Length: 435
Image (cartoon, rainbow, N blue to C red):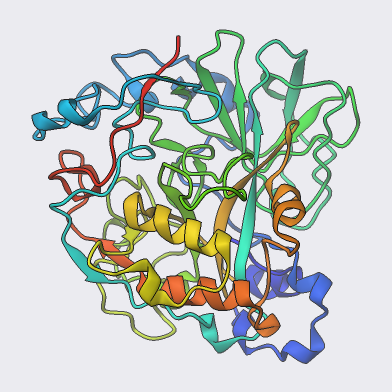
């Protein structure tokens, strides 16, 4: 969920549509800084220090209870042979995989390819969200990925600044958690989502929190909400994307991906944020606002999702898996840039999950930002242009993302027993994780 700061006051008092503001009155710097509604609070998070100290989310996960769920609620995907599709074992690739570069089990939702049984429904995404020339196309939701289990332990203290615009550098409560973080790593105060994932001392427990700040090298950090721990070697479904309850590391475009020298993109599913006011189904109850694997929807979903156009597409809910159907030739899309062709390959073979609302008009991808570097910076060094752009730029990259949006469909039969639609996967399953 992202909202330009000039719009935050409108959201806080319950009025005003960001798209209705005259773009000429808003500077590009303002439009570039996304925040959530000032009154937003993730439904599934521990939002006070006391709650964070007592919640079961603080307990390291076990193989019996992945993603902090009870055994009764766990998805039927706990091995490398998903339930209901036993033949998948025959296509598991040989070799090994670095879990720090591509985490979670081979049959995790983040690693499963689209299958031959996928049933598609048009997504009908507007390539010019809200018909706003300042819409992000694409925007980049930077995810703080901090996988440094031997780094010094740093206190994360509670801050209620959240998305109010107040300074996140200042704690307003007590200790939420201790996490390993390099001493010289700084996360400045912003109004962005700033979801974070930390790898703990045991080398497998992932702590996820949002929004995080650490404004002084060597000092403590702050956050607002902590989510259930997950296992680096498990399904890894849930996490700190508050609009869906989905992972803040799975599906991220990582450093080393979307680089020159290859025609294929990342070999895993991606994550996108959409302008929910027009892109998602106009739900009337919270239970109707999301679909598996999402565990929740935005607290304001009823009355906001689909309200701009009375969206009646029931397939388009928070958590939907988007993909380019295999019957669509990538060459037919007319893509102009090499990284867009790589993205299209990934979206046809693995797809992307809707994990958040942009709130202001836009279409975002999630990408890595952490002690090892920033994906946006790497992308610009590689390709010579910014990864995050605006509709009004009308560049080759912008036009390509719009073409990709038009081609996206929903995998309507994506489920715990048919991840990616079931049938024969378009690609071999990811190799087993090196241990």
